[in-house]
Image 1 (cartoon, rainbow over the protein chains, first blue to last red):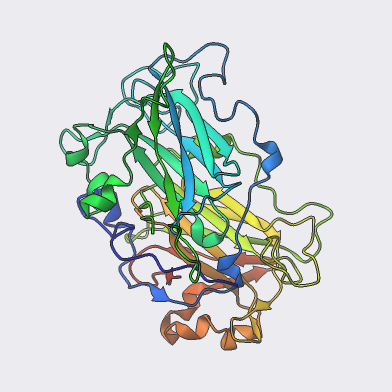
Image 2 (image 1 turned 135 degrees about the horizontal axis):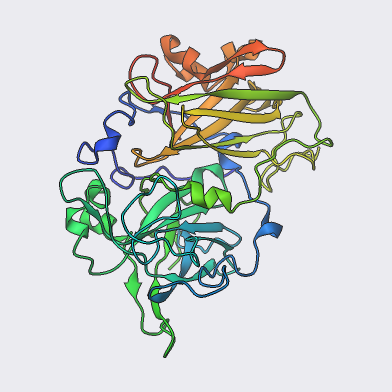
Length: 230
Length: 186
């Protein structure tokens, strides 16, 4: 079995006291390096047959359309060698247009939208492509520090071909003025690496008279010993 | 080479995603093997339960076969066992999996690994997924397991689920501090 290449340092964020909740939750002991075995190179898959046809259209899941700016989010799931990963499970969850999640823990003083649950799932196609139709999530305050607001984001959960390609992350939008102030976004220290989490506005993906398009590729770990694509 | 997308915290609201998934039911009447329960709590550095953690498990079937295209050994895996478990912790940080005892699986350099479950921990307040393993205290093979023996002796017990009753194991995940669970770089 071909092992996966190790993740270079600086990609996945370390403990960050600026994000207060990490202080009691991030482990303090160093990680123990172990070889990859059959247990990590294999990995879980989700019962694909239960992914339904409107699961990737968050504007079609209720009786009426949700309030907010309709957007398209499309991209590919690739490995670090640039190869597309078909049949990856891509799931999203997000706040509504007012910046509120349909979750009982969220008590932000702004309306829930009865026509928006804020969750979606899809499988990548043979070229590794995924596509969601949703509404642009609003900004919202959080208790991390005085006047703390999250930049607009969509949570992504990706189940790739193996246990080692599991990724939970957040996709951000271009030009959001809250990004420089956000400890979660800036927990990734290197600007180039951080920018991988920001989608791009794409006029070719934009559908006339209907919705803006944002493009975002997701790159998971790649195998050792596989040549890079040109 | 394309740059790997960084991880970000799952935050406190991933429960809405799990509600829309199919139920996580690992064991049916047709599943082969010994039924077991693994339960425990996820604890923070102050000893408080982590009420918003996402625990994912991946394991072999009772014969040590993985339901995955890269496990190409001749004996096929149990069609009635998928091997994937997930759970949102409760208010007190508790979680519970009803599964089967995994069989031994091959070690990288010959021989077998002791029966184990690989685990991902994600949560609000955790920026990156943390990986650990659950071993079982009634397995003699633990002592020679090639992964376990890489762990300093004094910390090995953090990887071992304690049997507290028939087929019932307890495994706490301590994120930080005294008895901090061993997490792996794989």
